[in-house]
Length: 422
Image (cartoon, rainbow, N blue to C red):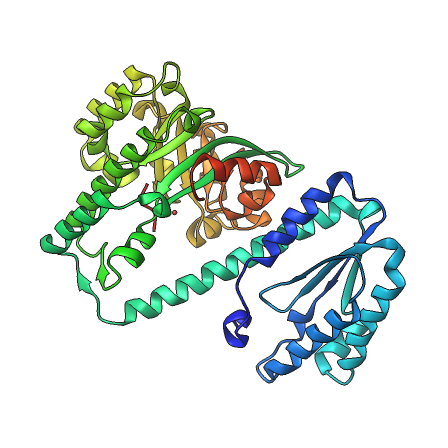
């Protein structure tokens, strides 16, 4: 059940703000405590919306006058970070909510188990609470993505026209004159050890097809005609390269990756982009190429690869699946990285009879050369680590990054999946 949608909660990423606040408290943790009211576990189909709003309101009233920060999450959970010396007053506020919910079967069940509230002494439990806040942020992002997916599916149920030549021409004109900064996204690729501390290896920049569709052509299915869609992605590549050309040297202070077409590597736009790069920057740029695009014309790929390698760029094969991974010869393709997509099929293989095959394929690619993509939970990262994988990418990884890293990442472009991810 989508609680935020059902009850009309504002979806303003409170858990993300909570995580940022906890990270800022790293050096000021002593003398502080936090309490998490797990009201989301009381929500059921029979729960009137006003009951949950009243519970939140009662708690807000109870903490008036206390020093601290309040976060009301999109699932009705409430987190308050305050001063340890005000613990008694905070406990009374929690008890008021507990009293309000007496007689609720779910609340009674929680009370007998772990209780409605979970408490943290930040002086002693800071790392535990930081991990807890990260997980809340990841879960919030997953709910947001789920809502977006449902909205997209709802939109798709309405008749939408297929992209045609006329529509493509209109899109091209719009993209050529538009500020594409709102379409640009970024995501970090990190090395992660057993302690789950991320170390940024590179940052991928790409444009969002979903945003292009939403902003410029909401009544058109851009991907239905594969031939025209391929041409559209080349238009987006051209705009991305132009955008980065005008961005200046500050974009290239660290390792980055760009998701491009093979044809785009041979285009005048890429040659202009290359010509404007400062000395020594090319070695910090990884070009990501989609697996179907590479294998559609190996001769064109070989020519583009040799040209890119001679200039100092490195390459990554993107979009590799559970079925294609065992067939990949990274050395023959002369790729620096291979990006493996985590999905239900890969999970089934890893947790079933295909585990040994996947492990062997990972080792053939090279443990330091394979990136596990679309990591949404800690469990996915742990399963990847058990296969020997060291590099990870996804929304969960974003949540693991320290606050200053996230801010540094955002400043690398104007905003944070094809250069054309859906």
